Amino acid sequence: MSDQPFLELRDVTKRFPGHAAVQDLSLAVPRGQLLALLGPSGSGKTTTLRLLAGFERPDRGAVIVGGVDVTALPPAARHIGMVFQHYALFPHLSVGENVAFGIPRGPGRTARVRQLLALVDLAGFEHRRIDALSGGQQQRVALARALGPDPKLLLLDEPLSNLDPALRERTRRELRAALEAVGVTTVLVTHEQDEAFALGDVVAVLRDGRMEQFGSAPDLYERPVTHFVATFVGRAATVAGTLVAADRARVSDGVEWPVRVPQAVAPGRAVRVVVRPEALRLGGEGGIAGTVRARRYLGGRALFSVATPLGVLEVEGAVDAVEVGAEVHVTAVRAHAFPAED
Ligand code: ATP
Image (cartoon, rainbow, N blue to C red; front, side, top):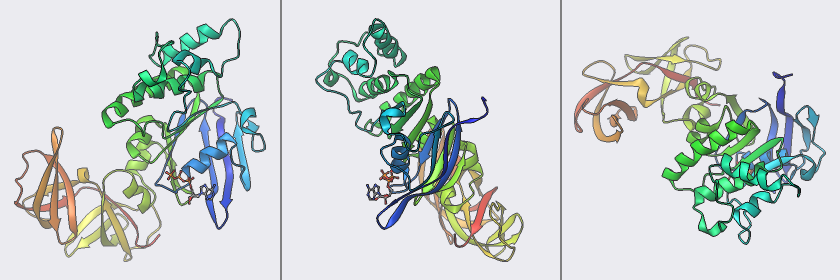
């Protein structure tokens, strides 16, 4: 039973007049895992979340939760907890009253509120007013409220997007710890790769209503299957090239880079070569000649912008590797090649 998926979308399509917001979407998530739906604006993330919640009905396909087909069930019958971007807390109720909202009245209610507030690190906040809390604390109250009824599935719609970057990172860690403690299967919508990677056990990358790739963070980062995923996930430059062998692409006269080729491409064909800053090296000779235009500090390392005939390449290196203005050569230790069109 445990290796059965807990949440499944089977070939789900949702059309709005004139276009499909979600098309032929199939995925499966084991119990207790967090799925991040990652994609740019308009890619179908929110529509997928609304299909899971029951606010939308698919035109085709099925939504399965815990082995039960819930496709035709209304939201209230699905036992789903939701946290929205704007938290949607009740401002006139206290923290404790907000959290108690979804918990049936009875002798255990107060204890359950205390337990949930402890879980989100807000023990002792029962009587606080909502407007006397920071954004991060409000987010945690919203999480505690959503967990109150012990939902089968938790849905989080860009839950950290209202927080400033420093608070966001801390709240992310707290959110992750609380969700791990509860073990509830969760779906998170985000357009930020950092967030998807920090929180998701698995990540689905959506584009124009279709899923481009489904996998763990290392899968997506190191083994992207499309040019879209390779460039949407992480920093990357794309240069034009020609595949000259199963694992080599020529990017300039006499310069070949080692490449992974995830889609079928015949040698001799034009390709788009994607390379990340940490896979490029600065050297005195060989490779592509260029001029260092800028240096940006990344903690203990630096990102050098090098103007080359292929365009500007960002190269990660030791902070003191070269000075701005230096003439250098850039070589690649690994890259990804995709068909010129996809
Ligand atoms: P964002 O990050 O901007 O919220 P998203 O990835 O969540 O985007 P959706 O909101 O799911 O994307 O929208 C997917 C597509 O469906 C978009 O083209 C959007 O305009 C369209 N769409 C969404 N809801 C409706 C609706 N109720 N009626 C018509 N079109 C809709």
